[in-house]
Length: 110
Ligand code: SF4
Ligand code: SF4
Image (cartoon, rainbow, N blue to C red; front, side, top):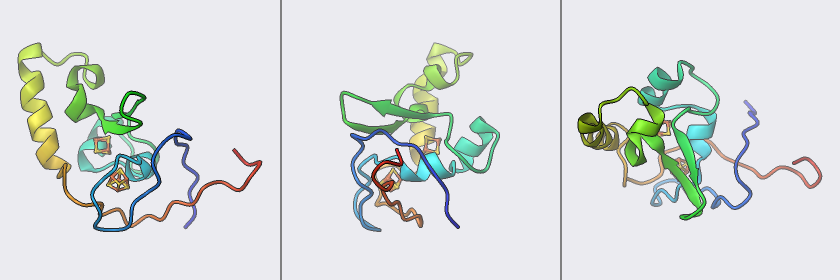
């Protein structure tokens, strides 16, 4: 199945399966993880928690990086707990396990 996703032109290219996650954003822009599905209330398309970090030149999970930006109602005291839990839920710092294959748009098509 083919799906169009939109990513920052500066985003790093998707690494090979098993390589360290480089924040390319492909997986989260195509299909939210279980936590992202709950948050975004959708099974396909970009996750609401996906944030572009211009400073780092890559995408980050907002639930991990800035939980209160994603969940404005969250008490400040609970934010570190949510960030830690999200890190475990999404298995942060593990290799890329995305089964998707991203291809850049053809010239002139975005
Ligand atoms: S898990 Fe893979 S596809 Fe998802 S952001 Fe990391 S490197 Fe990109
Ligand atoms: S890792 Fe974070 S940004 Fe990516 S789909 Fe899951 S909740 Fe959303």
